[in-house]
Amino acid sequence: MNGTTLGLDIGGTSVKGVLMRDAHVTRRSQSSRYHRPDATGIANALREALIALTAGAPEDAPSGCVGLCAPGLIDAQTTRVETSMNIPGLVGTRLDELLSRVMNRPFTGVRIVSDALAAATDFRTVATPLIDGRLLAISLGTGVGMAILEPDGTQLTVNPGTSGHLGQIDVSLNDHAPIGPDGGRGSLEAYIGLPALRTRYAERLGPSLSRARLSDAPIRALVRAIRIAHAIYRPHCVALLGGVGIAIGESPAGAALHEKISDGLTSLARPGWRLEFAHDGHHAAAGAARLAEVGHFP
Image (tube, rainbow, N blue to C red; front, side):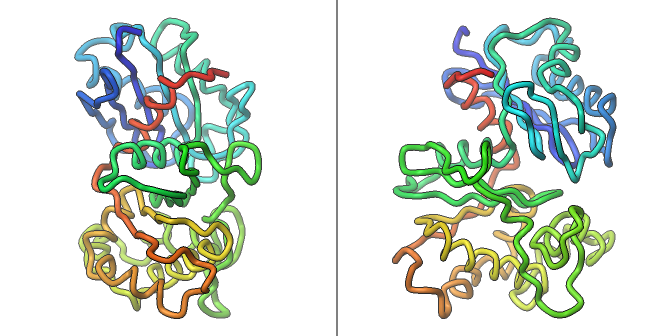
């Protein structure tokens, strides 16, 4: 593998990539933004991200292993996307075949994982101070994903390949709760997924979210979801990842979020639990590369 690994993250609005050498990210890239693309649109975005990483055609990429992550439910054996609420154009696509077409060559060292697991893996690897205990990582972007890592770095699974679907937990704040993309009323994703935030804040999403306060409905819903998660999973550390997680961490709400969650929190919660925020939008791509280096290819 020559110590070189590629990591690619098919996100809800763009593809992000990293080039990793000897477990360190040496280059990052991001495709042009898209909106609900089909498989061809995703393939074009993958090519764009790869060209930026390799300074050449996709087939010029290093011959080491490749990690790829995407949102939704992915069949572990076939790598076929079974469900993807935020990129429905990917449903039915075999991700290993898509990657081979984009790179114009077959790969035997490909690992395909969920975006939530990939992001959690990288965050745990680079977090300072080190995370000593169970990590509950919530990926906040176009959708809402979650992965839980045990102290040894393995994933806690509730259903095959997933730690559960925190984005679909009912956190209704009133009788007129919004409906999420999966059809569930009052879900966390219906409050704080990117489409919901765009509806709430319109074109000023970025500046508005950076000024988010505890009284805002998306933050209140997030607080409720994390309090529920403490009772079920008892994490030592909760991390908010993704672009929305980064923005919340930089907002007035971020500074007060730990105290708000802790106010009257169940005694089942771990004493001294930590709340962390991502500072890097490429955690999922880097995590996919790290997991590819571990192996266990489908």
